[in-house]
Length: 66
Length: 183
Image (cartoon, rainbow over all chains, first blue to last red):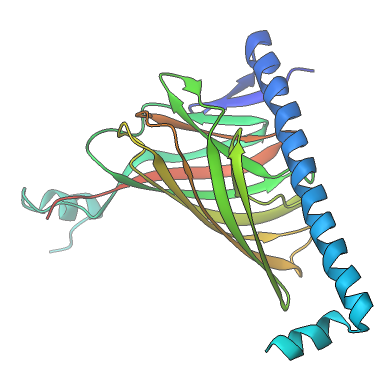
């Protein structure tokens, strides 16, 4: 089933060329989103590791920092 | 004597300019992967407002690309993000992307609303992009607030814009306005 585009106000099926371009971009965009999510997870894991070392909860650390 | 709204508009003398002028009438889209609006940015305005009501079918966010002569630009988008989720506020910065993240997914039929502002889109210089929005993620009892500021750093003049999702579809409507730049 073809992907749909609203082309300047008109809903229609994408042409084969438009669909290929969209899918190529979508693969890149999803890779970007995945990289972003992984970076965020790594950051949170590093933060948690420090809290664990200090024996503090996130709320306690926040209270300390004001 | 009673006047109709059109008669009142006709009575405004020339020389009085509107502050906000609709350059693209409210346009609805249904189950679309991509939405394009071409020939909307001109030298008449430097700054534009886009109102965007939307819902997405999956967990894929709505992204934005600038367009010139019907071709979308797919490099050089960078942005800073601020998200409020219940009592937690978080942020992040993302650089050199293939598109600008302008509205978070709703993961189902939960209408959400974004206001996007573009500055200098039609000038041959970087375009500045602001997106303020609230979204209902998977239900109306979990509203979020999010704000993005960023840019498309390519120094090219653009005349249009594309909204798109990487997977699934989006349904909603948008309107584009130009901010008046003379008194």
